[in-house]
Length: 243
Image (cartoon, rainbow, N blue to C red; front, side, top):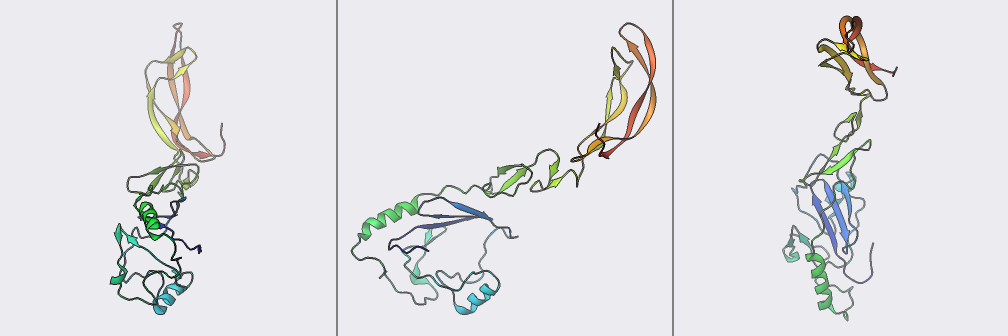
């Protein structure tokens, strides 16, 4: 509540679910609406400064208003979507009188008008949608062109806010590869069809659950040859035994 005998500029900018409030060109404060609607759509008259008892009590019961008190003071100008509101065209006026008896008549109103015009005409910087982001697990918030944001998840996490980890959605899987089998200075005669376990399991490890034995003929750099049994991965899964 401010009552210092001078006019103040209050700016409220709504961009989809982002609401930014600033007073007298000061520090802007933003909040993100968690509701399902992206825009404010009015189907009934908009009340400014107060509200009649019947709709007021209904809004108060629905937790849409914190109290039923009305504004007591002076409103010099009101702008909505860059258009000045004409109070004379209001559908209903209740306990409203022209002028402002609360202001000191000796003040230079013309000088104050110029200051108010400068404050209103100066564009406010767009609100940063990442200021109150809900990204989890050290994910990165990235602002989008439509004034919203998206969360860039770290490896092992997913979901709109990167709230889902690999414990709930493990990415452990078998990946087919075709490569030479090597041992010291020896290797297989040709690339073999094998598989390896890739992906994550949160705090667990992704390892082979099933495998089969296969004989492989190895050729060494000194010309010697020998046969060895190797394990070929058949199935991968998460396990707490990490080795």
